[in-house]
Image 1: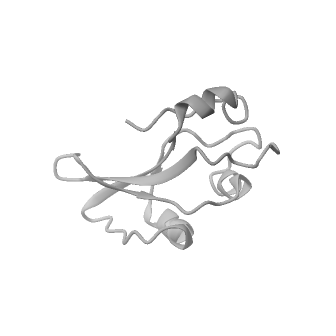
Image 2: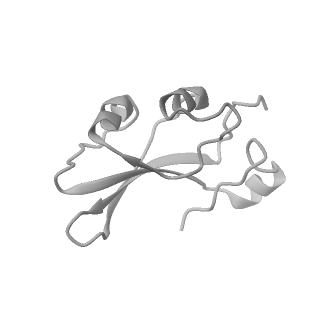
Image 3: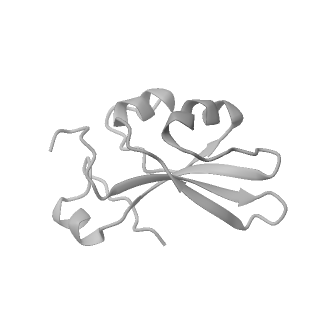
Length: 106
């Protein structure tokens, strides 16, 4: 697997939380995108697999719109970009991605 070729088990999603009570309101999986696109956008190093969560602002919604059908409402929700594995056993066999291990989805 090439260094930036993301494995099938690696998923990215937007999690959104009610501003009123901070409860999880929903999750929207992102369509696959090249890792370098995320790294460039978030000004991350080339060896960063982008597993941290990133709080999203309205300008980020414009960037992510081609990868989701989610209708953003920043007055009502806070949004976060998250990564997870949907197959922990395969993640371990593959020794993670770029030497790091995303958490399984809770």
